[in-house]
Length: 202
Ligand code: HEC
Ligand code: HEC
Ligand code: HEC
Ligand code: HEC
Ligand code: HEC
Image (cartoon, rainbow, N blue to C red; front, top):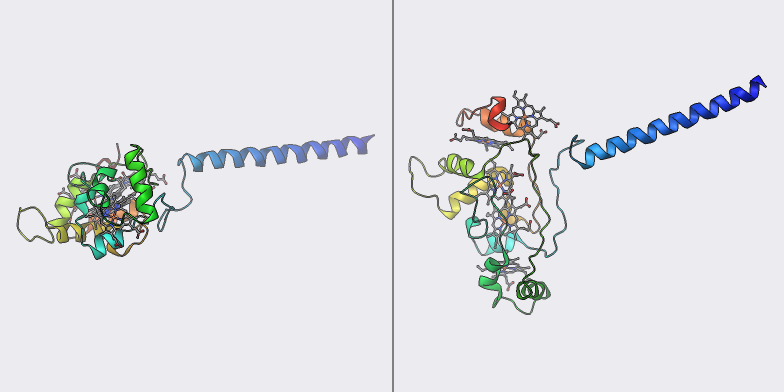
C-alpha cells in the first residue's frame, strides 16, 4: 500500500517536474521571440532576400551614391529602403533579360512592392538617429567644412557602422549593435558624444 502510494507520488513529482520544464521553456521561447531577452547579438545576420540585390554591383562596380537609394538617411532615424521606382530608373532598360530583373519589373507593373527582409533592427527602447551621425561623422572626412559631403565621404561614414558595403554580394549586419558598441564609439576622444543613459534610452 505504502509502496504503491509512493510510486504514485513519484509519478506526480515526475509529472510536475516535466510540466515545470515545459512551462519555463515556453516562457523562455516567448521572451526570446518577442525580443524581451537576447541570447546573443545578430552580427553577421544575413537573411535571404526575395531578390538577390547586390551592393557590390551597384556600389562597388558602378559607384552609386548610398543616398541615391537610401534617400532618408540624412533626414531622420531611418535610412529607409528604396521603392521600386528608384530601381526602375535603370531597370526598365538595364538587363531586362535577367530573370531577377523580370521579377522586379513584374512587381513594378503590378504595383506590388518587393518585401525585403530587415537586416538591422534595434529594440524600440533605444533612440538612434542616422542624420545626426552622418553629420557628425562625415565632418571627419570633410575637414572644417560645412559643404555637403560627397558620395565618397558619405560612403566612408556608412562604412564605420555597416562595414565594407561595397563588397557585399548580399547585405549582412557587420557590427553587434550592442550597447557596448555604441558607448565605445561615443567615448572616443575625437567624438566625446554623450554617454548618459537618457541619450539613448527613453
Ligand atoms: C541601387 C540602390 C542602392 C544603393 C546605391 C545602396 N543600397 Fe543599400 N540597400 C538597397 C536595397 C534594395 C536594400 C534592401 C535589400 C538588402 O538588404 O540587400 C538595401 C539594404 C541596405 C542595408 C540593410 C538594411 C536593413 O534591412 O537593415 C544597409 C545597411 C545598406 N543598404 C547600406 C547601404 C550603403 C552604406 C550604401 C552605400 C555604400 C548603399 N546601401 C547603397 C539598395 C541600395
Ligand atoms: C553610427 C552608426 C551608423 C552609421 C554611421 C550609419 N548607420 Fe545605418 N544603421 C545603424 C543602426 C544602429 C541601424 C539600425 C537602426 C534601427 O533599427 O532603428 C541602421 C540601419 C540602417 C538601415 C536599415 C533601415 C533603417 O534605417 O533602419 C539602412 C538602409 C542603413 N542603416 C543605411 C545606412 C547608410 C546608407 C549610411 C550612410 C549614409 C548609414 N546607414 C550610416 C547604424 C549606422
Ligand atoms: C543607376 C542604375 C541602377 C539602379 C538605380 C539600379 N540598378 Fe540594378 N543594376 C544596374 C546595373 C548597371 C547592373 C549590372 C547589369 C549587368 O550585369 O549587365 C545591375 C544589376 C542588378 C541585378 C543583377 C541582375 C542579374 O541577373 O545579373 C539586380 C538583381 C538588380 N540590379 C536589382 C536592382 C534593384 C532591386 C534596384 C533598386 C533597389 C536596382 N537594381 C537599382 C544598375 C542599376
Ligand atoms: C562610429 C561612432 C558612433 C557609433 C558606433 C555610435 N555613435 Fe551615436 N554618436 C556619435 C557621435 C560622434 C555623436 C555626436 C553627434 C553630435 O552631437 O554632433 C553621436 C550622437 C548620438 C546621439 C545624439 C546625442 C545628442 O546629442 O542628443 C544618439 C541618441 C546616439 N548617438 C545614439 C547611438 C546609438 C543608440 C548607437 C548604437 C546603436 C550609436 N549612437 C553608435 C558616434 C557614434
Ligand atoms: C550610446 C547609446 C547608449 C547609452 C549611452 C546607453 N545605452 Fe543602454 N542600450 C543601448 C543599446 C543600443 C541597447 C540594445 C542593445 C543591447 O541590449 O546591448 C541597450 C540596452 C540596454 C538595456 C537592456 C539590455 C538587454 O539585454 O536587453 C539596459 C537595461 C540598458 N541599456 C541600460 C542602460 C543604462 C542604465 C545606461 C546608462 C548607464 C545606458 N543603458 C546607456 C544603447 C545605449
